[in-house]
Amino acid sequence: MRNIILSRGTASDIERQVNKVLRGLGDPEPPLPLEDVRALLSLDRRYYSTTDDSFLRETISKLTIAGAQIMKRPGLIRDAVRKFDLRALYLPDRKRILLDSTQPDAKQRWNEAHEIGHSILPWHEDLMLGDHEQTLTPGCHQQIEAEANYAAGQLLFLQSRFGAAANDSPPGLDAVRALKAAFGNTYTTTFWRFIEDSHSKIPMIGLIGPHPRFPTGGQPDFRHIIESPAYKTMFESLPADRLVQAVRTYCEYRKRGPLGAGEVNLIDKRGDAHVFLFETFSNTYDCLTMGIYQRPYAKAVGF
Image 1 (cartoon, helix red, strand yellow):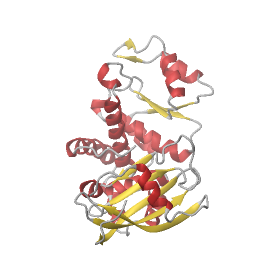
Image 2 (image 1 turned 90 degrees about the horizontal axis):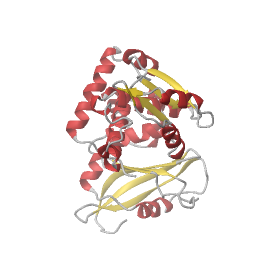
Image 3 (image 1 turned 60 degrees about the vertical axis):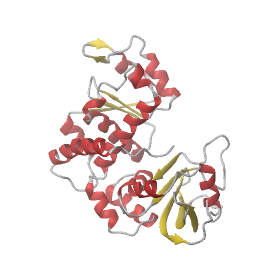
């Protein structure tokens, strides 16, 4: 799945909502304490488990919107939680965030911020747990999830604070590691944010997925392909199999830590070749690859 770049108007609306929260907290230093955000917004946080769904069943059975029970068969949502492997939910009726208790703390932090994002965007309330035709379309679902992700990123990375810190270091995985520690977020979310929101004039591409030397049968080559705004402007989106070929030209077989780096030629929308430096790191369950623009290359051959 490729990242969705929101329209400037939508992004600005989300930024204004997040800015209200951060100002209400007195413009905090990183890492952002989510318990303070919940207190400010009067949000409740609870946990559920797919192996013991008694709490989830009871909560959903009581869920109402505008005084009406939202669903006569609450088991349908429990089934959806299991089927789609949902890690978090936001229940606007009770201003309650539900988190999967089996997730690691760092992932729960992102999931909680994502649900807070839903809660602070006024136009999301009518879409949460909706059942009319518009809210069930894949395009609508992807859009509201992208908006909640953007709000989560704006919160956890304190809006312009992250971009300013990121721009103080040359782009690369070393900078991502340092910023991960400073802002208290996961490697993957910091990596994603770095590509989308730093060094605005440098085309960058990020790849998240299984080890390219150890393919997993039936799984996509990459779960996510992240293209920076500068990359989207200058380059076409490449097929995943071509990107895998590029990474395999330098990637080592070890399963953890740095997996290598190498120069890769990519062709822009005009047909001209450019050199990118690709580097890959494995945290054992995912490989993160960052491609950073280096310079034009006269020979028009590439991926």
